[in-house]
Image 1 (cartoon, each protein chain N blue to C red):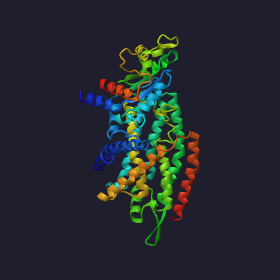
Image 2 (cartoon, chains in turn cyan, yellow; image 1 turned 90 degrees about the vertical axis):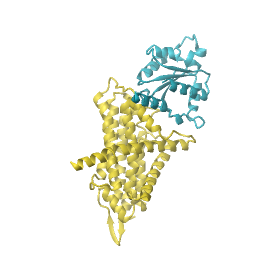
Image 3 (tube, rainbow over the protein chains, first blue to last red; image 1 turned 135 degrees about the vertical axis):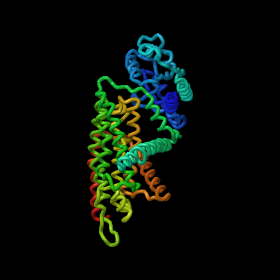
Length: 146
Length: 321
């Protein structure tokens, strides 16, 4: 029990994030990059952007999932070691936004990931684009629930 | 049997595994903090590297299907064990610990190249094409920096000094011998050849640590952490710890070889700590003010100007400068 709790504590102190852009308009990506700048500096909380899903604890998704991005997104999720969670940034990733019922999309990111892992955990950060403060708040909530 | 117990204590507790890991984690915090300050950020808290490692230890270990599982899981241990042994030998000489003069410069340089080999083999064993690219780049980098590093370290061995009207040089490859010689004749760094050699060794250390501008093997923006791409959980934690141990061992090795060992007084220990921190901060600043170069540029740089400068430093050292 003690061992579990120290790992759980460590997870909250050092969430490493892998960013997947699933054909969004780049607006959310700019706001995500803002989180790493001196003004918000999420590295204070131990957040790091990593280059490989194998190193990540949090999958950060932005943009509506196009048909071409469906498999890559699912594979990125399956490649992450447990425990893992997803942070859906922007209204497109949460619920498709303006792309709802469009012909070239596979669905919102949570639906696409649940196709391969029904137990996946999600936090939704709506906005078009969400402010960096909102993204940080979403991350903090995600860590609270992990 | 007594000696075995003594050496196990040296290797596992002080100045080996436990001490070096703790120091290395503190050093990697210093690295991240200084990097953050350069970018006008606050940076992480001092406990951050510790939590990173604990978190990785608690994560699931994924072994990819096309990998050679035994090698994939064994190489992180090899890397960590070799780096720790190199750190132990360096500290042993720097502190002048009992047990006689063991391990010379060549052994330490050899041990320090094993972590790179382990990363290369681990990347190749992972069965990932990007891992293979990272491995091949790391291999080229090792070929590039080992030669100038060794020549630069030899400057400390061959530098001519005048002590009591007599021309002498250390003339020994033993680390303890080098420390003793510098006690008698003054630090290698007090001569121009020593400064040049330290400069060359610093550049080589940047490559050994896999830091920008020589992080082609990891290059997370193009080959997604290269050789480490498939590692997760505890094996990745071991590679991170190896990196921390190297961060503690390399500046200490440079300071020991070029700037003398630790004097057994409070002032001596503080001076040594300040020297090591200075070397580390120089490395961090170089890392933060340079872009990544291509692997062929890096190789040309190491075999051209860096090796040339090392040879010049060796020549100056023989002339007594």
